[in-house]
Length: 486
Ligand code: NAD
Image (tube, rainbow, N blue to C red; front, top):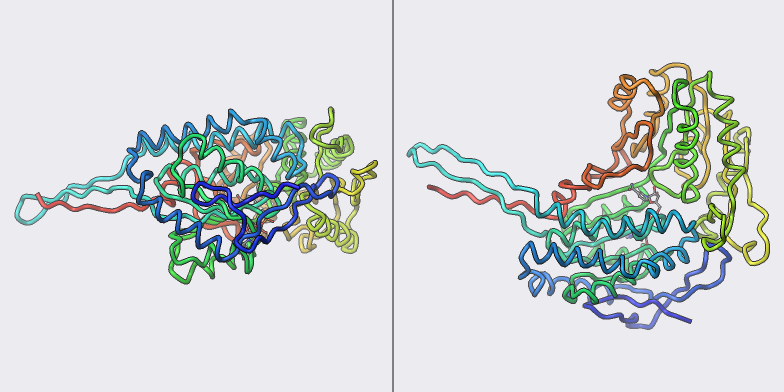
């Protein structure tokens, strides 16, 4: 059976103690391959390689040369497009169209977009007047921060990892990546692309393993890691922030959400149903920007619930390779256990189960997979656990509302503040709503439409900082001011 290895200093290497763990398929629970399990020794080796690379050939590249190299990385991914798609499909079990049309191409784009941003973003300059009349000139220069620790989740593994690695490298840093233990394959493949296009050894390193007391924790505690960029659960963010406090390391956090979808009675009905169906159920509900709370203006409520129910009941479960399948499993049995516990909790709290609520009947080997039904509830108070807590599964609670002020209050009554999607034909209202809902990202008559130049991040407990476009550069580089007396 294949064992995925770490990628350290340009080489695929096993763990020093030869420790491995197994990766199972979400589709049928069979063991797909084994993965080297890294700990302190592998993190030490990777960080040391990344530090050496900071001062080697990589540092000597001109910005133009670095930009060209990152374009070559993107082209190298595209050249091996089928390998990346197959690896991501095997790890996540998600439908072919999602991976081939969104996750892998956007992963490649992350290298080009941020390479282009670094070429075009200016720094500031101020002329200071001085008492002697000669003045002084201040200007800022942009420097890499150092070794960046990248810790990524499993829900869109390639896209979310490259979204951090792309700008980190564009700014001249080196990286040590700890991908999710559930989805290590595409990050490992990226190491091969880095070598193929001539990225110097040590610039991009990968150490596999888990979080606490494993590769993740050792990376966040390493003295030579200058900054940590993390996407994952808010609870994990708390642990990482504590680790980063020792050594005063900078953090950028993209965390959980419990996002509200809001549909007004004047919305384009078909577009709104389609938009909320995607925001609640795409990727089997495993999207941080997804909507697990839906609020529909009362005159439209019954019709909307019925239409969304019909969409849920029409999904075609299956393998990514099955013609006609458009719906995948959850990432793991463990995650299914969590999601099903919320399905049970909703019933115990008195929900009306509009559709779903259980496990679909799957034939043959697929019966062992992490499948769950898309699920809609109504009738719960806002205090119910499934209305308050992030489930990260294919489910939503739908509630009727009567006024704009009421729905703003409902949307804001949550500890998270990642995103919202608003459906209305009244644009003045849409703008008002966008100002009033306390989230980092508001979509109007759309969802998951991403321009990589825009600020991306969460308010409240959904994150710290913004990435995207110039905002990524603010995190991945350090501005130094130079003051020259004239
Ligand atoms: P997770 O927090 O369990 O794990 C994420 C990563 O952190 C994994 O690589 C894991 O091994 C590592 N990790 C866990 N504990 C650690 C520790 N103590 N120290 C260092 N590393 C540690 O998250 P997940 O279950 O993989 O992903 C789902 C979560 O991610 C959801 O909450 C979702 O909302 C969030 N998410 C947020 C965004 C965003 O942009 N805001 C995007 C995608 C996912």
